[in-house]
Length: 163
Image 1 (cartoon, one colour):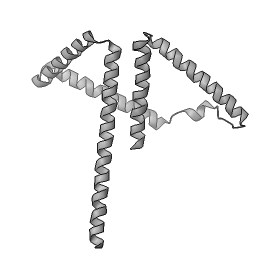
Image 2: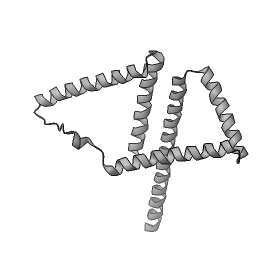
Image 3: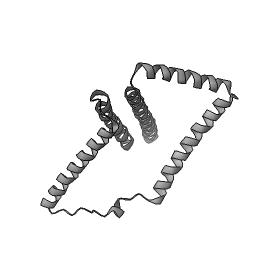
Image 4: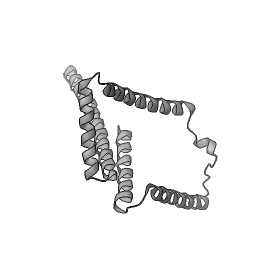
């Protein structure tokens, strides 16, 4: 549970930094990428010097940093499933077999078009990222509350059995 909350906090922090860099500084994504690589390079150099002073050995073999074949396959399968599901929904909406889905898609696209005209794209993307992270946090908190509630119910039932 804490791992999922940590992921959403990291994503919202990174998204905030990207939004600040692109929206307020009026910089490009290429500038952002180069700034990130410079910071990583300098941080790794400082850590390397620190570890050398403390006589700590650091593995530099890139083979130790690779992901497993199973992880790569699961990531590719998840991506393929997501793209396939989106493609099938768009195909059903485009053929007009499901009128309700077609109308929902048209309304959503008109709303997105209007929002896109009013706000810069970076702001819309950041707002979507924030909503997604808040959704993840709420879902994790809800699932942890239901687990805690089941735990407390089982604990009170065990106490009543002891009486």
